[in-house]
Image (cartoon, rainbow, N blue to C red; front, side):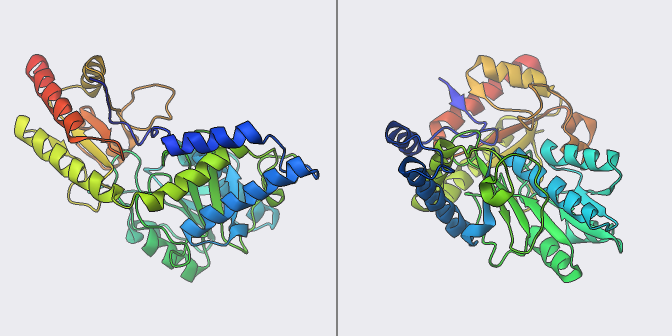
Length: 378
């Protein structure tokens, strides 16, 4: 039996999305920037999809910019804003959370190497980034804050609404990486006071290589990809229209699958309870915090996480140690280390992530195999 429990790395392409992409490509191939009828039909489809995504986020269509995915959206938001502020000769202090995805952490290092002042907000013992942890780092020259909505390793939901509201009060631009939140928990930027927000298609049963950045009107960004005048001159390069068509269909499916949240919540609860029964030392990371039901970070003290991962893989079960954006490497989690968890927890933790197609049968099979592996390795 093959079991896929790595939905946070990527989701299977929904059949409806695959059909939408195939049907579009079979009939259309025009460049949206071309003035002839082939190009204009592509342009119409591009703008229709922009409207679909804007409506789902509660944004205006001219606030949506298509990118190649979450990483590019994060780079465009943070580097683009930093360069824009620097061009105006403003002193810049940036606050990032210490538990961000690598596409934000690496940007933070880049900014530091290029003369920007960066501080890192630490999580509390439950793994949350809270308003007090951000507020204590603020200075008179703080211009930008970035805190992810849902942590990609633990599923813990950070205090982004509170942080964003405080930033707005202080005139500070607030960005949030919502890649693990979009399509899973409610996001409406008409009430959520973030200024920049990143989303990705392949986390919501869409294609890889496509994403978007919400940029609130009035926020100035310097372009990071030079080229033509695509995406209102913010992002040069011909748009990935097949990917964008797929993203649009995946967004439409969000509304048709309103039970995804409850489905995941029931699977998560049953799975975690079953693991506690088969191994008394099982530790669910952040279990007392507000968590996404789509992610369970679970430690098995006494068992090395790499050994458990490889043994599960041999049983046909796909899980992960943490982020999929680490070139296939297995390293101690910076998120768990930032939470100051004991070494035996950090070194034995795996991420199980669930989705629309996860079944109870798959989870019971996984529990049975984990029990057998524990008996063999302990």
